[in-house]
Length: 173
Image (cartoon, rainbow, N blue to C red; front, side, top):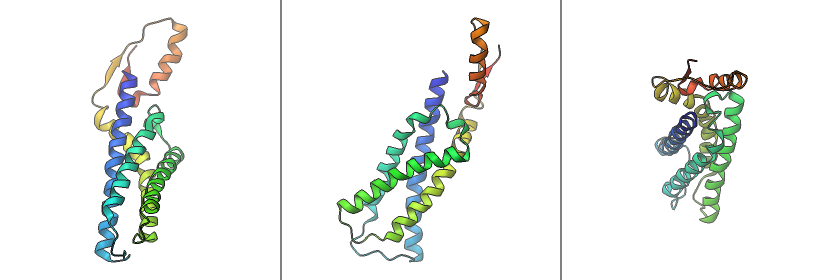
């Protein structure tokens, strides 16, 4: 039951990151088109880069597999470390697209601006999304839990469960 809730939190966080990263890209593209800060060369297509952003977001979801047990209590340093790994995936995909398509129309300011904005958003999302998702999905669905076993082993197990009470597990005895 605890493992299922951890996996559920990881999946919810991954979905939220996919939506957020894609929304940041669409917002950044719309902002630059509206303000005309950066002029792109004529053959530039934002659609292929959007597909790259979406693919990198899915890759980010896959990379969350090792963090399901700690997502609920990330501090700023850990959120920044995870965001750095996620940002490397975004950069790798976007620069691979630019290199593979030999796209001369993409602006470095456009890509670097998006990458910088995504770095900030990823740190904030990794820090604040898990507690928000926990409150929305697990806080009201508490599972009252009783542990049965030898007293010597129960104290360590009870402490381990108390550290994960954020997942909606309430130890009652």
